[in-house]
Amino acid sequence: MSQAEGHRNIAATLVDQAKLDILQKASVAYANWVGAEGQAQASAAQLQDSVRSRDVYKSEYKLNQRTLNDLLSVEQDVFQAEFSQVSAKYDSGYSLINYLTAVNNLLPQLGISQGMKQSLPDLK
Image (cartoon, rainbow, N blue to C red; front, side):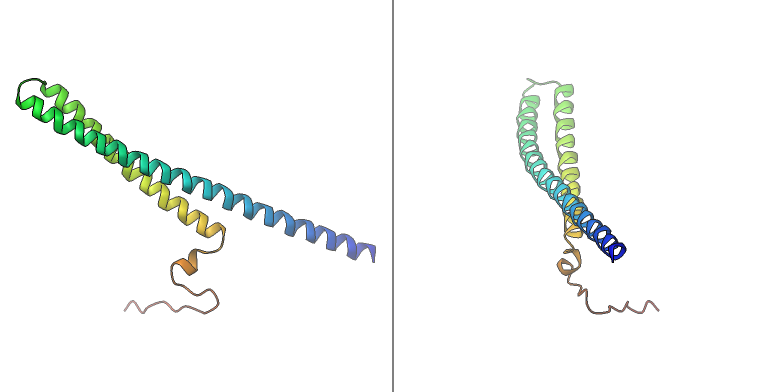
């Protein structure tokens, strides 16, 4: 009887550990998702500022108040802001998928029923 109780306690401990692992993964994934969303918003604001600066520099360049090097430098800033925005959107999507997977909600979000067998389309 005590051996069975010991096995039951070990099994309960393993179940509790698995639950804690899942909660930790979900928590980390959620934090990553929220952080990536914040980065995406900051990148969008940075891009708007860079585009406005570029427009001002272009006008000043046409009036011979800025050099070509100045104009190219601000163009690099626009490119970097666009790159940061795309990167942040990717990170956000990736983190969202990780979160939905951690909370076992990815398949329903994709419209796939977990209880039903899905058949693959015929590729012929």
